[in-house]
Length: 280
Image 1 (tube, rainbow, N blue to C red):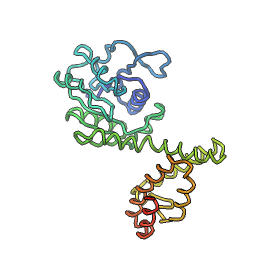
Image 2: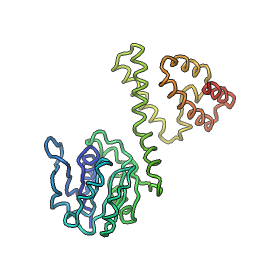
Image 3: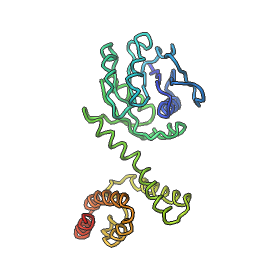
Image 4: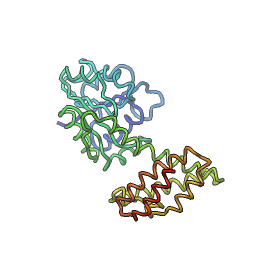
């Protein structure tokens, strides 16, 4: 029997999942949110509709603070007695899952390692991406089936480690955007027009990501630290003295870059000089 999915939560994550699953041929029997006005997708609101009871998988895609309330809506009359309950949070372990498990529902995490800023692009983003899973074996099996339909791969989140797992996801998905903003502001501060600065930094980021294809982080690293270029890094540090916060960020990231450069085989004496420079 094919899975039938009901999605509770119609924000970007819920709408992206709905579009991606439908595009993959999965039967999405409903997308339910807090309101219907202005929703770009077919969304219901209010009490859970009768269609929720037809679902074999109920997927919760709300903010962490709303998870327990959303799970509380899954009463015995609202959903099928054997429905699998999945939630899309990478960091939360909601206490309300306990009551659902006591009623016989398999439950767990289905966390897309996908930055869904635009739900319309979700189907393409899922292909080849990873989805973090944990929970009961029945929930993990359901998550694996959905991932396979999406063209995604899965990883199991080690027990008791969701906070560290989610921190890694945030570093990879959110901080490149932050770094792009910092770099762009440096250029704008020199008088480069906003659009040119942002375009140049965005192109650099695209190139850096492309370098990761088929490479380890150590081999993908480019720039002065990868070359062991002490003089250039010294110039950077001098130039950033008037911006202590950005300089500190540069130093912290450069220290990690030195470790990567060592793995890649950069000259040990140059790297030792860089470490002394960064410690000052």
